[in-house]
Structure formats: C-alpha cells, structure tokens
Image (cartoon, rainbow, N blue to C red; front, side, top):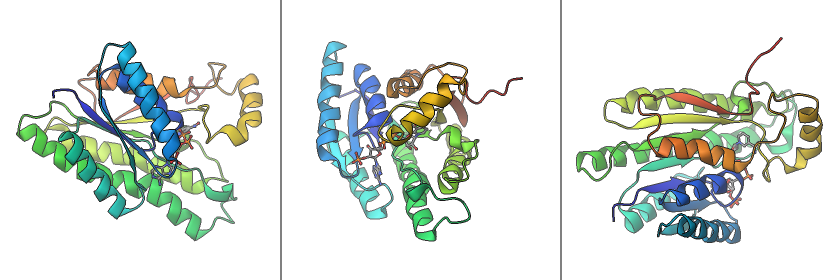
Length: 263
Ligand code: NAP
C-alpha cells in the first residue's frame, strides 16, 4: 500500500468532515476520529468513500472514538492508526470545543477553562509530539516523504472575544505551537502549518447564526459570505499536494479577508 494516511481529529462533523472529503478525493486513507457521535463519524466515512470513488480512488477509512483531551485515548488512537495503516503522512489537529457557557472573562470558571484547554490545546500539543516521533521513524525507514502536521486554529487567535477568553487563548497558543514544531521538525522534512478559519457554517456556529448573518451583511468580512467546511478542506488539500514546499510554521488565513485591517 503506498497510499498516504491522514489522521483527522474531530472528523465526524463540520470542518473535520470537510477536510476528510477533500483528502478522500485525493486518495488518502483516513482515520476519522470523533468524541461521541459515532453515527456522524460513520456518515463522514460513507461520504468519503463516495468522494474517493468519484475521483477514481479506492481508499480505506477507520472511524475511531477518542477524547483528544485524554492521554489514554490519544494512546489508543495512535495504536489503532499504527495497527490499521502502519504509516502516517498527515495529522490534522481539528477537534475543538467552544467556550463553555461563553461567560464574561470576569466570570469565567476554572473547571471550564481546564476542560477547554485539554481538548483545544493540550491534546493537539501532545498528539503532535507523539505523531512527530512516529513520523521521524517513518522518514528514517523510507516509509513516508514530507509528512505534515496541520492545526486548525481560528480568527480567535488574533481577535478578542471577552466572553470566550479560554478559546481565544488556546487558539493563540496553537499559533506558537505551530512555530515551535515547525522549527524543531524542519530539518527532518516534516512541515507544520496553522490554518485560521473565519466564520464557518457548522454545528459550532449554528447557535449564533442570526448574529453572524447580520454582521456579514453589514460588512464584517470583505468577502460577504459565510465560509464552508470545504473552504478549509481546499486549503488542506493544497498542503497535502505539496503546493507549499518551502513554507513551514506558517499561518494560512481562510477567513474571507476578515484579518485585513482597512480604512
Ligand atoms: P463542530 O461542528 O462543533 O464539530 C466538532 C468536532 O470535534 C466533532 O467532530 C466532534 O466530535 C469533535 N470533538 C469535540 N470534542 C472532541 C474531543 N474531546 N475529542 C475528539 N473530538 C472532539 O466544530 P467545527 O466548527 O467543525 O470546528 C472544528 C475546528 O475548527 C475546531 O477546532 C474549531 O475551534 C475550529 N474553528 C471553527 C470555526 C467555525 O466558525 N466553525 C472557526 C474557526 C475555527 P463529535 O461529533 O463526536 O462530538
């Protein structure tokens, strides 16, 4: 088997599903991780097989429950990936939760902070560490070439929301994590990227849809539309196809121009 293997955390819904579909169309074998929503993960797998077939590929998928915030679950996820595919070409740190209760920074609770940081920051940091060590061995044995680690951060990495302090801080830290791993792994041939999505239609943003509909109509984003999970999938596909071969530790904004200041 010489097909590349990609592990996508939080691939049962939303952006993770969009990324999975893009990579299926490129012929990647996929590990579709999820937290609790098995049926949605199986739907992602079915959709991926269809997308792969339409593109002329025959892929394998593994749907796997694991809480990215738990060290034991990350170990299980790694072992399952090793047992099933024996290789890893890309890790996509996508799983994430929004700020629990969206409380003002002066009311934010420590237990909520810990829970969010475990999933949105500690999990990606240590999963990247485990996967990077495995990638180094795979490069040495000639099993994979130019593997990549991609983390899905957010415009919240650079945009203040005082009712989501923990979320903003975790996303900002993912940016530094990308630079750290980027430098540490560059010489070995592992490239590391951060993708910063803007306002993307998913279950996460569904509760605030009316608010963002209004803001987008009023000009919040230079491109006057919501982002779609497929927009993120296309950015990941560019990296997967080695179209950014001399970049690492880099942030790619997929936000309809939201990050641009204008007068
Ligand atoms: P979503 O629709 O809420 O989906 C979240 C996904 O993450 C689901 O697959 C969920 O699995 C999984 N997940 C949640 N907690 C997990 C855990 N502890 N372990 C493993 N998987 C877990 O979210 P989304 O909008 O697609 O967001 C995906 C990523 O993009 C997140 O990191 C988010 O912060 C980031 N992002 C989103 C937006 C946006 O506008 N939507 C913008 C910028 C950045 P289950 O289905 O099993 O629950």
